[in-house]
Image (cartoon, rainbow, N blue to C red; front, side, top):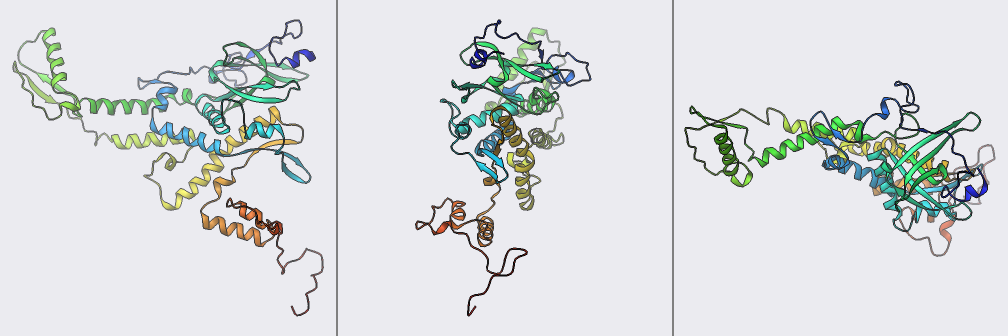
Length: 426
């Protein structure tokens, strides 16, 4: 690949400058059915369609479920709150590179249209709802990234090229927000994949959990139709007389007009032609409708990895386990997402010896008293200074500069060295 082609950022390059390698679509079934490397059964699930419950399951219908909306909102919202630091790592420890342009790109202004929070929120939402996040990387004349523009995850197709000497290389056929479509090298597309079975594209959660979501959508539709029809069990109208098909249709229409619907609740009805109404024995209580809907909320919590109490399912919650579940939410549920995004950013943008890392410390600070006791212990042990302790509570540094000093416990010394001499009179 020529130098001019590299500066072109993947756009407008002549076929004489770069000859495309043989590519395989990441979702193409180009391998045996039991292999996940470049396809197989994991790539054959369509993105939307009817479930066995008979309802259409796609992103729109799935988000219509309150539990799904809250699960996606809490995961993407909390994820967007946590800063993504750009750091250098050496023998002296880890140091934040606050003045590096990459730090500003991830923590300040990813592009002119979105704030940091909005960009991170849609990043996580795409992973949760589509399985993949893609962003176009705008670069300056020195090939440094200056802006990240989110792409429709369903408008990007990943391709791979493999060479025995250089290994695997990714290319992306993408449609940009201006409507243009072309093939881009991996340096121009920042790809963050969710859980994957081939390492190239994430699995679409809506497609693979279609049946579970279909049950919830169908149950919600049943409840809506139940109340729309006056909350009454199904009824049959019978008569000993012979009734023509046209008359039966007219009787059914009249019944629905004058009896069905919540606005007709309690209205009397007069039956003619010897008609008799027989109600079929349907009991939602015996059918455990409430228990069914509760279990479906728990299934949604499992699907997204959210503790039930965070989507307001408190039937099994206690004062003792909610705090522990909240801590587990940060460690076990958000933790993999933090690592996935940070490692992807490191792989795509970080210089040698540098890395991206999330800092979720604000999420695990606990109550005020617990925080105060913890900060006080660090302060008294000489681990942090007064100014650093005040910063934990968003307080300004001490004005005279004495807040930068660290205390040293007088009853402790350095291992292997004699104890310091006590002052006279001590």
